[in-house]
Image 1 (spheres, rainbow, N blue to C red):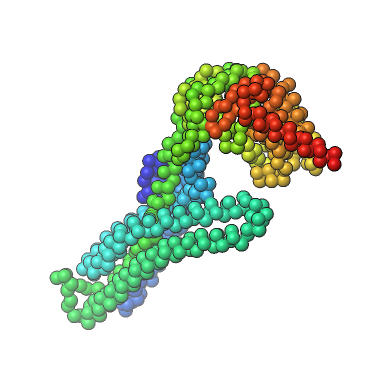
Image 2: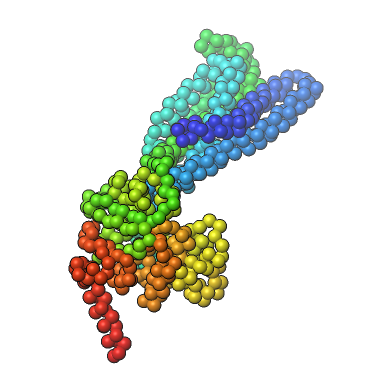
Length: 595
């Protein structure tokens, strides 16, 4: 069997299914051994001078009864054991999905999407295969082997000892091979992860690949990974085939021993030649030999199953280790304190932040206090830490306790769900699902009405664009919003964030791809619709934040200034430069239009 802290509870949960399956297996194993005995009786009967037809008919009826029992028993163990294995797989997948929702964003930064998807697919399928077929083979091989050994010893224990020696070799060989197969399977899965990652990136970035005419280069890269994948798979298959061949060779050897030694015993019995084996007098008839061969043929399946069990268990063990490592990953501990009746005051106290596995801080010694109801802009050069600053409010990464507060409460002391309900965000990438535009906007609120979706679309100034589509709000945008322009995707993301109606709204550079007229309309809606609520807008243009209450100017991860736009023109060199550059751009544009 396969044991571990994450899988043991499923054995207890579905023990009734496993018990039905095991009873069915034992019944099948017990009754099928009557068939070799019946064949032996028939052979001995026809070897004599007279055939007892009444006895022959009784044997035929017994065989028919055995066939019925085998039919019912096999249906029982198939339905019950496979049901238990598939429900266990579903339970593990549900646990893994719930776990993925609780893990911090940093975990998925360290583990690629392809690797995680392999855990959810091939690894779980490998575990399910062993819990189904592996359990059947294990119990079937165990009980059937035990029953056959007893029957063979009762028939002729001396000949049985000769046969059992090769069986011991199979058991020893299986134990030696298992650990090597587990290692090879783990290598195979790791190579599959790399292939999955490369393929996913190629399909996701197909437009970039085509734009740079890089199809051939990507194909060569894929071929290199495939060759490595092929080599690892061939190595694993080679070991499995060698193992199976050795088992088949041992089985053929045992058959030869039975036929040779048993045939000689039958000949001696017919000729009346006394013979002994291990000081045991042997008297074997042709029927006894047929019965003995029937027992051994019955035991061939358990011996073949042994090889498959070793291979299957080694794979399942490696896959369970990968899944267990995921389920045991450290997650964010959600405190009991919740954010309630949030007004929207945001405070940063000596806030310094490092991304995982980096030494250079993205933000250093940030001191800010944003009063509830303020509209605040965040500006700075690329890489100055703007997105890092606003994303810290969402608890996407753990931060030092006491450095980030909402309404005076440390967000690390509050449960994550209540923090994220208090802070709505239109992220920089503006991710959209392959669904209708109405569903994408309404994603922020369960059970939202069509009127609420329309209001949010008006706020983001996207209504006119959507109504221009053939299906309007029922238009399905492609994967990641591929059918929309950059500005349209940004405005759908803004509408979605607005619909959450959170005390704190973050727009992370969400108007960079829209025209000046549309940007002005959105800013007017912020001033009107978000009055009395805190709004933080990350911007790359000075004009975007020119009428806000205050502006945070970041430079190299530090706060250069935090003041009103008018004051910044006096005290902030970075802001002054942004304003001058934008004025020059506007003058150049006007000159170009005039020309």
